[in-house]
Structures are given as C-alpha cells and as structure tokens.
Length: 108
Image: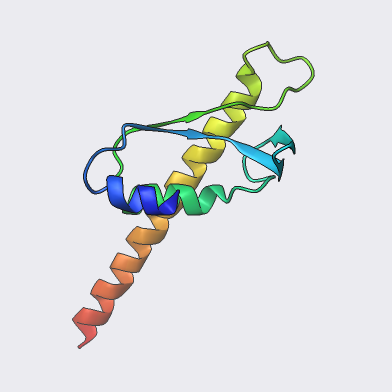
C-alpha cells in the first residue's frame, strides 16, 4: 500500500482513499474502529499527505454499534473526526518542523 501511495500520489493519480481497519486476517477477521486493528491510520494519512495527495478520504466498512443506522452514520462520523484530527496533527507537526528549521538557519 505504501509503495502505491509513494508512486501514484506525486503523479496525482490517487483520487480518493477508503479507510477501514480490521482485527485478524482472512479467513478470521472482524471490522473495527480505525486504529484498533491491523492498520496504522497515522502512517497511512502521513504517507498520503507527504505524497501530495489532494483527493478525499472516506470511511469504509465500519463496525456496527447499538443505536446506529444501517449505513453506520455515527461510526462514520467518529472515523471522519479521527481522520481529520490526524490530518490536523500532521500539518501542525510539519509546520513546527519547518519553523524550527528556519529558526536554526537564522541562528547561523
């Protein structure tokens, strides 16, 4: 997956990304919330952002929770907030690195 992001991202060939997470592997796995399974959402979002990805990210195949609608509106909302939080944190982290680098250059 990361090789594909690295190759297609800078070429602007990634239109959208489906984010899902599972615990286990085929044939014995179950869908779970992002970050609770085999996937490291931070690493995926970071790779997308570093590649120049300009598409959109959607939550895909979410686990069911009590009281939610069939489509999983509540879980998708939680996934979207999680993804947005990761994107904001990565952007702030990168901006901080750039500011620190600029400050070091000014000192020399």
